[in-house]
Each structure stands twice: as C-alpha cells, then as structure tokens.
Length: 265
Ligand SMILES: Cc1cc2nc3c(=O)[nH]c(=O)nc-3n(C[C@H](O)[C@H](O)[C@H](O)COP(=O)(O)OP(=O)(O)OC[C@H]3O[C@@H](n4cnc5c(N)ncnc54)[C@H](O)[C@@H]3O)c2cc1C
View 1 (cartoon, rainbow, N blue to C red):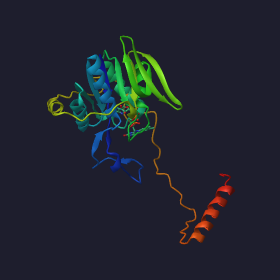
View 2 (view 1 turned 180 degrees about the horizontal axis):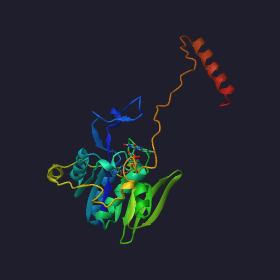
View 3 (view 1 turned 90 degrees about the horizontal axis):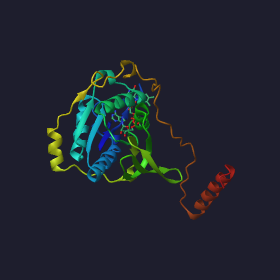
View 4 (view 1 turned 60 degrees about the horizontal axis):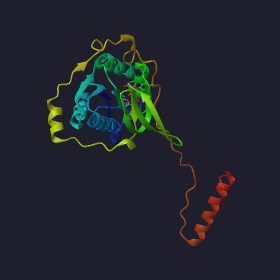
C-alpha cells in the first residue's frame, strides 16, 4: 500500500505577527515548524503501514528550507520525502497549491491513500486536501477521527459531524483529512533521526511534475487576499467594582436589568 502525506511548514503560531501596513504575515525571523495537525496524518500513515505494510511518501510545497519538515516526517516513520520548490510556485492560493500537489502525486503514482491534516494553522482554510482530491478526481473524507479498516477496494472511516459520527466506506484510492482525535503522534526515534539526516530529498519544479504554467503561483491563483485585519473587541460596557455586600446587590440588580432589557432573560 502506498500512502502519501502532504505536509505544510507553518510559522510557530505563538510567534505569528502581522504587518499592519500590508496585512500579510511577517515570516522572517519566525521559526518554521511542521503544521501541528499534519503530525496526526503522519502518525496515522505510520500506523497503517505497520498494520498493512507498504510505504509512505511525505510531500511538501514550500521554500528550499522546507526540506526540514520532510526530514521530521521521515524521522517519525515516513520512507521518503519530496520537496516541491520553485519560484514559479510562490504566492499560490489554495487552488494552485492543491493543483501542484496533485500533479506531484500523479507523478509519484500508484497511491492508495492520501492523508492530510484537517487544516494548516496559518492559512487555516482546510481547502487543500479536498482540492487535491478534486484535481485527482478521487473520493475524499474530511474530519476523520478513525480509519477502522482498509481492504483491497475500500477504506472504512469514521467522520466527526455536527451531531455525532458518520461511518463511511470509501473506494480506494482516496484522500482523507484527519482530526486530532484520531491518534497521538509519536516522537521521532534516534534511528529515525539518523535516517532523516541521511535521506536524499528530491526537489521537483514545474517541469518535473509537468504542471501547466498558467496554474502556478500568484499569477495562476484565482483568489486574492485583499485585506487581513484583527477584529476589534469592543469593551464599551460599564465596569463595576463592588466593595460592600450592599453594592454587590446593586450590581447584581443592574446586571439582571441589563439582561432583561436585551431580552436575554
Ligand atoms: C484567497 C487566498 C489567497 C492567498 N494568497 C496568498 C498569497 O498571495 N501568498 C501566499 O503566500 N499565500 C497566500 N495564501 C495562502 C496559501 O494559499 C495557503 O497557505 C496555501 O494554499 C495552503 O492553504 P492553507 O494554509 O489554508 O492549508 P489548508 O487547506 O488549511 O491545509 C490542509 C492540509 O493540506 C495540506 N497542505 C496545505 N498546504 C500544503 C503545502 N504547501 N504543501 C503540502 N501540503 C499542504 C496539509 O496536509 C494541510 O494539513 C492565500 C490563501 C487564500 C485562501
């Protein structure tokens, strides 16, 4: 069984700063890490490989330094890593990103399951997984919290839905996006770290994946981020600091009146 895990390098969330002028993310000087939600996809791939055999290929589209993310994936148990990196890919929206990833996956070929994270902690759209499936014309399942069985023809998954769970049999090959509930990602082993350090990471550009140039990068992206802003949290309410029991009762009455006026109670 061949499992492909697309992973994304993201800035460590706690360090993210926005440029107030341009509304874009300031990436310089921010430590990149593997998208935390992709670690669950890697872990699930390793578990499936241990149970059913096969190989795992991790793939990322990003700058040349993104090979580090692939090495981390290998140190956790992936067999190979492929970096999609080229100036022409830069500035891609989710449509273009999923196109490039799908072309790379087509080149890898003979895949059975593609495992993505639920969403990336920076872009946060959750569109890339389903986008890849659409380009490849294969079925996909999102918010998967369990992969209970893999047979020659189908994969049985449990999806989290609004009011409970949904059990689905999906034909192979298929794409699955996983949620945190699915497993507990392992830490890299020493052997894994040595393998990762020695691994050769091929770098593919548009030619290697025979990508149409009009679908690439900022130019090939049909969507644009027009503006990013932090919502203003309004704190226009009245502040009370009751010091005695009497004052406290007044404050409680006041709050009750407020809720009654708003028809909350
Ligand atoms: C309208 C719009 C315009 C944008 N314009 C720009 C822009 O001009 N410049 C810019 O730098 N960015 C831009 N972005 C952000 C960029 O499109 C996203 O960072 C990127 O396409 C991935 O989307 P995401 O972060 O929402 O991933 P999600 O869809 O949330 O990620 C889901 C999963 O897909 C996989 N995945 C996602 N990205 C990758 C990747 N690169 N490699 C491998 N696997 C991946 C991972 O498994 C991940 O867990 C834009 C985004 C949008 C929505």
